[in-house]
Image (cartoon, rainbow, N blue to C red; front, top):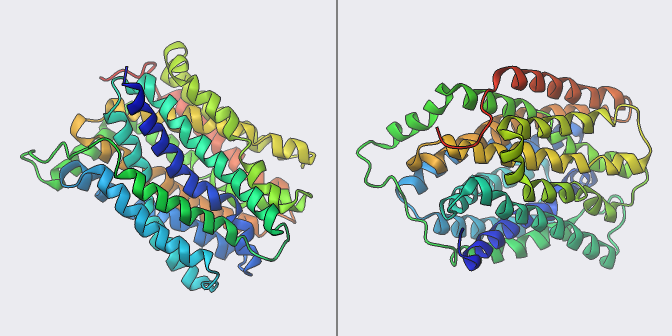
Length: 401
């Protein structure tokens, strides 16, 4: 077991990092709509996270695997991110082209941090398979707390109106990003592990990509890519959907955090699930949760059910996304674990989310005319991924090969 103080330092890192995105992401769709952007334009701006996740993480993983201490990279990234969030909070950037470039710059800096935080935490844990879920759940708590804080701030400032933008969310995100940058300098020292390797950076990249030769890793990564085609629907379509169904805007961030409660439970029980029903069972539960979530929206249910169905989103994240990260870490070479998490980020938050956000942007424009079609498409995709995973994945335990 890790020393308690060290565990809390890693948990606080997760809470703060996820709080930054949790401050503005749930309201971004309605904020952009207030600025006059149509569904397609909003889709491209949401896709900047995916673009940053495609372009940077593998390079950043190689950087910290070979040349730079992870905690210093994180501190620099969030300091720069705070400056960009300040521009968004100032309301001085409202044109579509400049917003796109600003968000793209932000995510090219920040997107690699999620995989690097995972690799940093797992490196300082004695037993990542059993301990990482308990550390990662604090990221979920941080996301939730940020959403509540934004709701309170918007209610206090009277920003519960449609059409006025959600600048308070970006201001809170900026302050949190500054705190993250300072806090990262206090994290456990995490120097490069591959600095003395005889192979070069390209050889290290080849070693990381060689993970695809392992059948179960390949099936997991393909499934994760497919599932991430559908997850952008949650933050692009659902905020406007809930507001159109009568939910006040100030309560949208809070409603979007409901899914984090079961995510916390799933992360807390992740070691038990991995040991009891195995890797395959745990990941399957996560895929089913997302499938049922979208199925529940096909019949235009009452607002309470539409909001409450978000609980399943947390199960999907806890069981599939985080459980999959633990599985991938156990299969990666020791010196390439940061790069392996970067590969996961590229395929999921990168390529999968890029295509998914563009799809969600197109569907958001047709939502008011045909809700059933909008939510039927992710049902079909997740259903196909579930069948592919069940038939192709063989591993039942998370232990290293």
